[in-house]
Amino acid sequence: MNDYDLYFNNYIIKIIDKDIKNNKNLKIKTRFPPEPNGYLHIGHAKSIFLNFLIANKYNGECNLRFDDTNPLNIKNKYINSIKKDIDWLGFKNKYNVSYTSDYFDEIFNFAIKLINKNLAYIDKLTINKIKIYRGNLNKIGIDSPYRNNSISENIDYFIKMRNGYFKENEICLRAKIDMKSKSLLMRDPILYRVKFTYHKRTKNKWCIYPTYDFSHCICDFLENITHSLCTLEFEENKKLYNWILNNIDINGFIPKQYEFSRLNLEYNILSKRKINFLINKKIINKWYDPRICTISGLRNRGYTPNSIKVFCKKIGVTKKNSNININILENCIKTDLYENSYRIMSVIDPIKLIIENLNDNYEEEIYVPNFPNKKLSSNRKIVFTKIIYIEKSDFCECLSNTCNKFSIGKIIKLRYSYIICAKKIFKDKKGNIKSILCFLYENTVNSIYLNNIKINKIIHWVSYKKKINSTFYIYENLFLDKYPYKNKNILNIINKNSLIIKNGFIEKSNNKIIKNRIYQFERIGYFYTKLYYKDKNLIFFNIVNI
Ligand code: ATP
Ligand code: MG
Image (tube, rainbow, N blue to C red; front, side, top):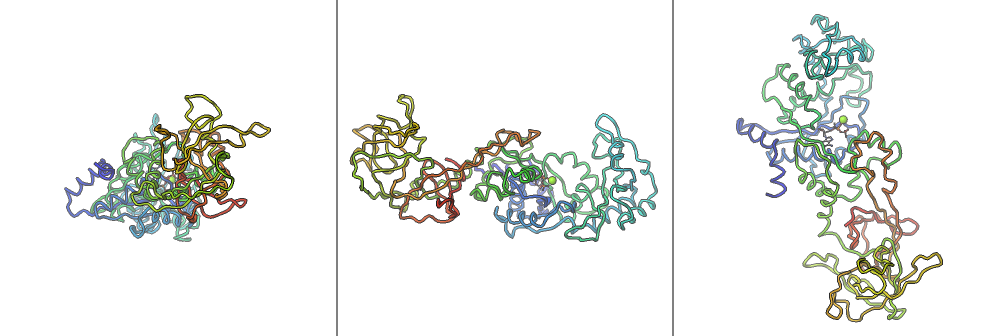
């Protein structure tokens, strides 16, 4: 089975297949219902792919429905960013846009219907009292003294409530279900609240707004949603979802809710509220900071839509909560970039290496492949010179035989170039290595053997003469803890080194460096540049390490 088949081998698909078997004309319709109070993150991507891929599989439809029941939270910039992210993930022109507020009239009429059926009532208890009367898991609820008011009284109050007669928190509409229910949510949940807040779409038309629970199921019904997929924390709400739809006298296919587990990702936080907190505390730079797994952050980091899609397929859809290993996400982008990104050599933390048996002005042109793993690769020309740079971390001063780094007396191969041996270290007054003197074995450019012995260690390098000064932005996890969402104060677990800036070099070849092109720095990782400069150095941004 490939990833795609495996992905669709889940319990939700089995339910849909069964529903279609029982009702051949059923047109499958799903929805993705974000609240536009922040940017989307990779957890949302899990839900987006599930909903859109199901719609696609069954030739159905998926709606993007903005849940704008709380006028305080909504911002146009969030609406726009959500659309942009979904389009970028590959679903441009593949969805209808709607808003919960499109249905405020219908939702209001269904509320009237419930009152007329004596299944909803106006409560004048304060919000605090409502909470106390509701009880808890060990204590059954107590009926509100307003619970048995007459239908006409309730209708009268509800109309007054809509007309702005009451203050906020003075009055609300509640479903009349069961104050003794084992489920706290079923103890007469609130359906409508007073809020004198201007709404971006309905302007000043309403001063009462339905709750998420009341509006969500009704919108699903009005949009002919067949399968309403949400995360596990809504499992409890399903009772209310079904109660409302069963009591508002509707015909046709009644949507059903199914749950799946939320995505949690090691070392990451996937919660709009907490991401916003990090922005306000200036820990990160806006919603699209490359260190957080918002869709825009990942895009900014250099992730591709395909890598996110492959990731969502790999993790699949289950009912089991888990904290996904960050390597799974990183492997998806690495696989995506492996074949088609240009190779170049770069040295991020340089030390000088001097070849003793070459002339000062020695220059040798070497043709190297841009895509070493493709059968037909174009080449570029780099230049080998007497002085080159290698990575500090590739060299070790120790003389131990068990250390596999380059060191005095050891023979290694320079990538695409000669086999060399380290002879002597030069240090500055502080004891730091200034340069390493090496001996070069002639006629070894095209060989990895020296006297019939295979040289296993290969290291990359950049010519001292033919280089481009570069600054590298290297990212690490933003949090030090694998489970940041379990910490009460996430400020205590911030990794202060989540951004490391280094100055080094990249090779100067006959290939021009292209803006936004993704390069694999050999043996290091994937980077791209926006062609910005810092102190005359070209800036490269790290996508993922090798
Ligand atoms: P947040 O906690 O980040 O604010 P939310 O659940 O409040 O998330 P919504 O805008 O209400 O965000 O979510 C839209 C849809 O995305 C919902 O159906 C929700 O279940 C789903 N979703 C949100 N977070 C995740 C996640 N981490 N994994 C999977 N699905 C998610
Ligand atoms: Mg929310």
